[in-house]
Image: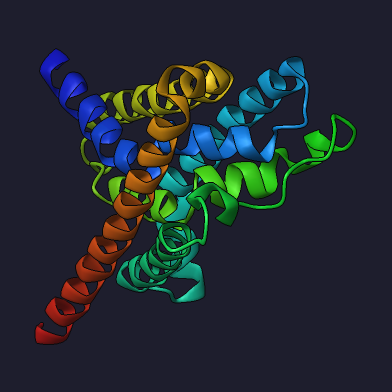
Length: 221
């Protein structure tokens, strides 16, 4: 049972980490909140982490049911989410000066900054359609509570811990984003953001590919 918990926990964390990309997102977060006080950035980081956990948890446990209600298939969500992620990565990668400039408009001051905590800082800047589609995919693979309650309960606990871990990583990365930028320096920051933009683009293409493969497979059946 312990091995099952560890496996589900690391699977959840490993699947979400490259898509959420806390380190690359932290630099964009810092640019957006550049005019805010350090205390406000800490509050925003906390709200992003909490909001992200709620988004991922809802997507994981009820996303497949919501899609079924509207008659939307998971491959369609993957393709749509992949297109959004790929477009965002392409825009960041080809921005004239720095990929950070492709982020949402900077917050002017502490006043009204909390209004931006969910949109755009949580969605789609940190927990975008790719992370939501991934959470839905993980949720669709969980055991049935009615037929295998013990295994399903263990799996759900492990997945929740995995979600908490990825959100805690986001909180720490965003809270200490200024220290990260100071350590990397101007050139290191530019390289990391460019690399993050390329990874986001690749993740978007990969999600699209998985969606197309699933659609083709469903047609063959």
